[in-house]
Length: 71
Image (cartoon, rainbow, N blue to C red):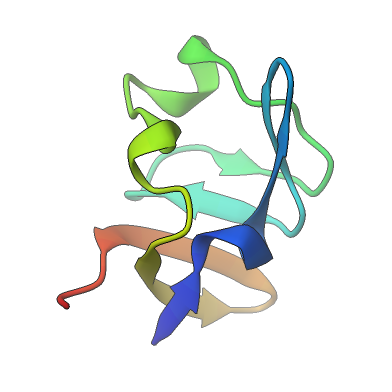
């Protein structure tokens, strides 16, 4: 399924906050409301995903992001 970045994350002046429970590329589960940083992002630069469509699988309320959706 394809979901736009802004549905999953809110951008703040310090980075991003999860809007829903998210798992990025089979990493650690990030609960809703978590402030994201270099440690919990495992080197992924979310700035490259802002405003783009993401490939997402939803199971039991957890949005697992595979990466950018094929355009």
